[in-house]
Image (cartoon, helix red, strand yellow):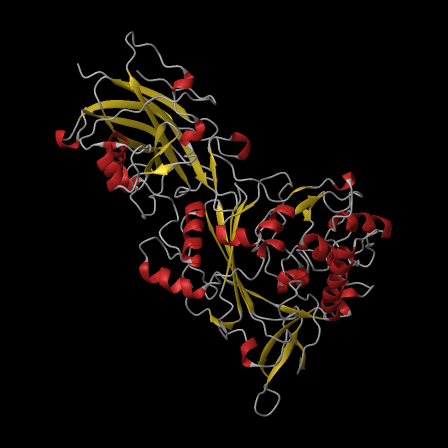
Length: 617
């Protein structure tokens, strides 16, 4: 018989009896388990045979390597699918320009001077040369990152979209002294750059991942694409080895502190998107001549939507900050109707720069005094690199670059946010506000399989079983109990997603004389299926409580350390169990998600229950 019940149950301790040939003492001694332990001949026989029959499909995702970078790449690939090569030198990549006094600036040989020395050429929107310069101290749109060259030029950005997943790479030119000089390094056709950063993002699930080039590299070169961390697959030996030396295993840059507005990128004037930082807006003469247009699209996400960082190594380092980060609601209603602001960098630095206001806390703690002072110094450095043209009061002003009600539509008549409104907002941004701030956790929890509220409502379907002849009597079993079901891991709608496995918990009893239906309490409990206090016997089979547990079953055909084939249809799952005549087998099938963050694994609430009577008439 077959039944599918989904309820949280307590569980009776039911004896587990399987056929075996060796004595309990002999088997226990062979397996380094003392006589009298739970591991007797019958349980050992069941574990060994089950592992032998199903072992090729029993494995954890992203477990092929202990190398930090390689494992991190495998985790990302298990969630986002194949990672494309990072190519800042390709035709699709865009150059981030430099603007000074409303003109575009580039570093070129000056034909008007003997020897054609490299100088900074300034051109207007019509392409006319306005002047040449030998140095750059300020620019219209200095970087807000704070640890890179403020007025750098000719960095490149690359964006690739695969279904619902997009990858954004920034190949950033910078110098240790954070200033720009007339050196060949800064030329447009010089492929050398200092900082490599990549963001992967799923627009449906809100999952995001960050990885950076290693800080032990003096420079990078974009003439050839960079292999992704973990290579292209588990079997890409060459690519995995190359990536392990390319990326930063220490995760020195806390990317999640800046990329914290529920999306993959934070748009500031420095990036030269047409919709921000141009007098007259996206259709203005300067925007059409100088900007990247809408290369980076607008993605306004509600503060209530899911947003979670992938990568167990990264999230373990920044676990405290991830847990403490909050979204806020602007008490004055000026800013958060359109933007998600947080108690991290989008609030404490970017909002302050956008509004042209200094951060302030009304009644600060000593820690807040220290933090605000440090941020004031950083904002002062940024502002010291901003041109007077950018903040002039007459026509053409672009700073502040966000104003109440009108957003980025700045002009000579735009007004700053009021001092009282800013103080209330700033208090919220620095965690000094109250209920008026509407604080909510920025990063949301990893969803367990089958949790509709978390965006993953997938359930196992088509549960069935078959009782088959044993392949050979030498195995010491009478029958094969084959369980089948189908399941599609469609969270985020990634056809190659591979972060869900199944635990199968099994109990055996004698078949009741009248064949009565089992009670819910007869089945293995959820805790047993989760493998609480499990004693592993074979590689992937152990005993938990009074149940045998098969751990980490992938879909049928998905062998250990292979990447899944794309599929949008439910995949077949199958497990073969050794069975003895005249026994009843009670099974709980429990899906689980490997979260690849500090929460580790999330199990479905109940799982599915099936039982089979092996009568052997």
